[in-house]
Amino acid sequence: MRHQQEPSFLPTFPDSEYVSDYLARSVAAMRSFSEGEGPAVLARMAERVTSSMRAGGKLLICGNGGSAADAQHIAGEFISRLMYDRRPLPSVALTTDSSALTATGNDYGYEHVFERQVLGLGLPGDVLLGISTSGRSPNVLRALEAARGHGLVTTGFAGQHGGPMRELCDVVFEAPSDHTPIIQQIHITAAHILCALVERAMCPRNGEPRKSPP
Image (cartoon, rainbow, N blue to C red; front, side, top):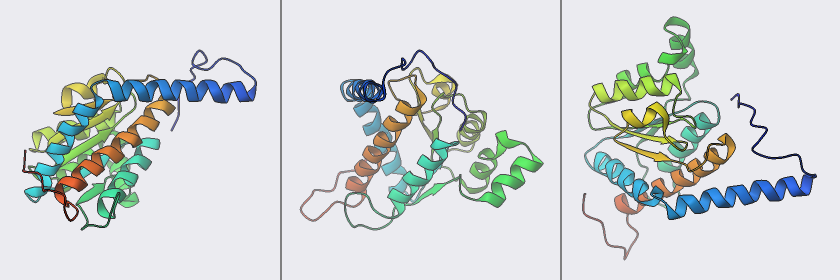
């Protein structure tokens, strides 16, 4: 994934000071996440995913570069486990089928690689999670547009301000940073929280009350 140079983000420091400054900025962004609207947004997103899965739906996830790796990471947490043993929860990363990705990219263009999969695999009531640190990735935006037209619930992970993604999502989580690496750090933390909330709702442990559908 090609990142834009942001020379003003971290000044030239000796290595130890560079590390300390980076971590301080990471902590500040995580604090903003904790104290802002993020927790409520993730709770709403978890409700949409839980409602879909209870009705027989699934979660589809897409993104590019580091966000593609996050899509696979998230799908793996749902299919396998996160906090405790439970049944698998239906989730598919649209970033893993190299034949579908390359055929679509070659025949139609890279901006269609997720859109075609949404149209072929998505069903009304499923949930699409698009991940884009800028909120502007053309292939993610096309996937969200296709999902909306096909009756899917659209959700997104973006950076602060959301970008064009905001207008295409029923629920969008915006990481409170404009620096790609820190946005990505917050995204995977948000993804773990999302999965944990759905896991608790769908597969409560013994002694934990089952939440009613929202």
